[in-house]
Image 1 (spheres, rainbow, N blue to C red):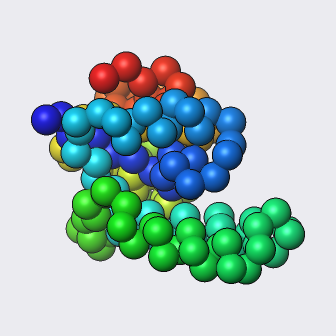
Image 2 (image 1 turned 120 degrees about the vertical axis):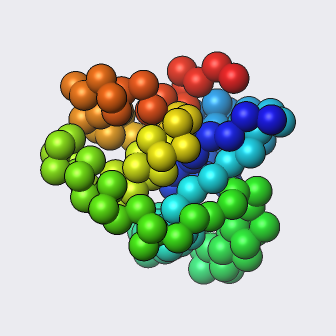
Length: 142
């Protein structure tokens, strides 16, 4: 079983119809282990909240998604343990510390971060040591 890091941009696609949702959902049928910083849950929760606020989801639908999120097959790692590496990556890649936390975990585990965040992929791609640890969900081949 291979280990990969997934971020909120992928996990939200497991629940909602978005671009590349099919590619994201294919991950659920693979025999991989998925990890993420514990930041994953508030990030996905915030994305659902935005949908409710914009009227794209009803409050009950949002509440149901939040309940379903508790059962998602992703093991979390404490963000606190990743902060030094995330900070260094954020400075080097000129990208947010939030997203860099996911990438820091992938680097630490010597695996790939699967994301739907094109800006993150672009930021990491200019650094060879980071580029090999990030992959767009629609380009991921297990």
